[in-house]
Amino acid sequence: MSDAATSVSIVTQTCVRPDSADAFARWQGETSTVIASFEGFIEQRLMPPHPPLQVDWVILQRFASLEDAKRWLGSSERQSRIEGATPMLVGRDDVHIVRDDASAARTAPVSAVMSTRVKPGMEAEYLKWEQKVAAAQSKAVGLQGYRFEPAVPGVQEDFIAILRFDSETNLQAWLESPQRIQLLDEVAPLTAEFHTRMAQSGFEQWFRDATPEGAPAPAAWKMNMIVLLTLYPVVFLWGLLVGTPILAGVFKLDFPVALFIGNAFSVILTSYLVPWTANRLGWWLTPAKSGRTLVNLLGAGLLVAAYAIMILLFWKVL
Image (cartoon, rainbow, N blue to C red; front, side):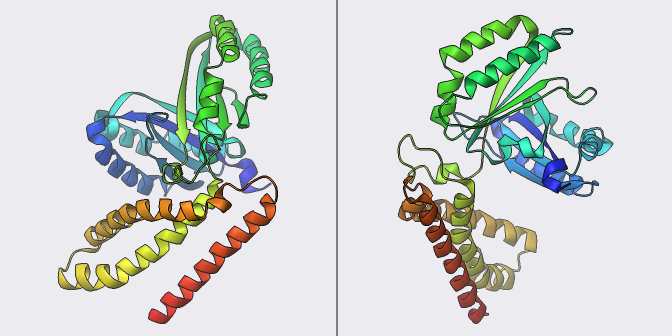
């Protein structure tokens, strides 16, 4: 059985005090070092808030199996880390476990993660209602995927539903639709608690100007390719022209300090270069339906050729 078929993701959504955002990011970086030593750990991703839709921080921690994920959740190391973060947080965390092939929040342009605490003895009726709402939302405009995760006794007491949509507009239209509101009214007697939190993947804000009004966000793999196209030369040239000869050579800065300065510069410059590049590759990011496959191949080939040219040029410089 493949890794994708057996792995699971822990999706944690938490609200951080505005004045603690930087401290929380540093805390999460330290947590990454701790979790990396756990058996079965695969990867971790941190998604900062994207107001107004996503106001929470979203942490995705992927493990090879459910047992590996449960070991981390119950570990003293995790408990110690949580205690250190408590002063930075507002309210409670939402922690959910989903099968990795179902982790819509990990790859979707925009997702809603819904958790429901069902009243004891009402589980069978709730499952019947879930089938009803799944059928209704399957007709919603822009729906890319839906996943329902039952409660896991001893680990997760809530039922989890993950909705994946192609754009914020279409997601909000379904969440606020009269049909969905009526369905929520129907299920209210069965539930003790219900709430929804949003999650976006990381680069959409850099591609808004290149996306036509009302169109879905570009495919994640295309956004990743453009970010790499702009970030690689920035990082290389910074290290060659500034980082090594000036920060390390002239000012004798320690590596962690020089690396932080380089990363800050790279993020700032990339935030300008990515939208500029995306606007010029709009024909590839959001192609028309006719000939889409050919356009996708041509654009990907163009970027791969650009990668190769940069590597060869930089190789000659060294």
